[in-house]
Amino acid sequence: MGSSPPAPARPDIHDRAATERSRGWPERLVLHVGAHKTASTHFQQGLRKGQEAFRAAGASVLTRPQLQKRPGQPLGARLGVSFETGRRRRNWRPAILADLAHGCGRLVLSEENILGQLTGTGGLFEVTLYPEAAQRVATIGASAAPVPLTLALTVRNPVDYLVSAYSQSLFRGHGGPVEAFVGRLPLLAIDWCDLAGRLLAVPRVEEIVIWRFEDYPQVAVAAADAIAGTQAADSSWFAHPPLHRGLSVRAVAAALEAPEGPERAAAAEAARARYPVGPGNPRLRPYDDEDEALSAEFYDDQWRRMGDMPGLRRLQP
Image (cartoon, rainbow, N blue to C red):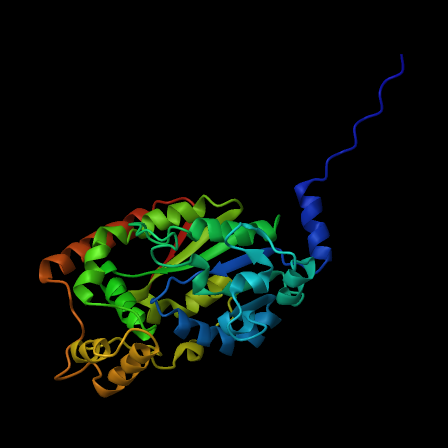
């Protein structure tokens, strides 16, 4: 009996990757995912100043405004994916990734809303930090398969993070009494180690580059170089003043006098200018000394534990 013809070889993943690159796809996709209230907007402004230098070094670096073909367009629609279904949209085309890469081997997308909302959108309160983050990253990753992923994440002391998140809720026209806000989300729920572990488990996520908000002025250049995969950043790109300052106690009280919605959002902006944090206007401080000490201890412990997590690279001064 004659031997059967050999089965056709299955395409190797490296062959598939080569095929995608021949379409203009990058060799690596980097997602700078924020988090919110960790100087992401300030960092993105610096990245935009360095775009030409990064592109010359082989990295296409795009920030939130540049990822929108039109103002207000959701990120998923721009990338041709649905975060609700976890699938590609009908408008997905291989050319989407190629257009963003501009022929570069490394594509960096800086968009803090990739993580989703702080406590999710399921309608019920969840005591988990960014419960939808892994699914949302996986959705983007699947649309770019088999390109490997690197993530970039900034973390922050839980007390300061929650106070800043509350202020942001006022700027969006929401927010009630601060006591109710901080009572719904305990400090120990701001577990960056848990978030990092969930993100590292996403398929093809090979590395997370992470730095602390408190170290940001000292590590901004190193962070930019790390996500771009080259040493091209300049400290002058990040020399601009902070873009979003927090609220004082008087500013919060003034904002809450306005009805919820657009009027409260406008009132919060006006109050920030009228009652800036400074002498005579103490910053909002809804936690007592014991809570602040607990938060600092918990945060320091997380940072130490992240140093032992495989696939996680910490940036420090």
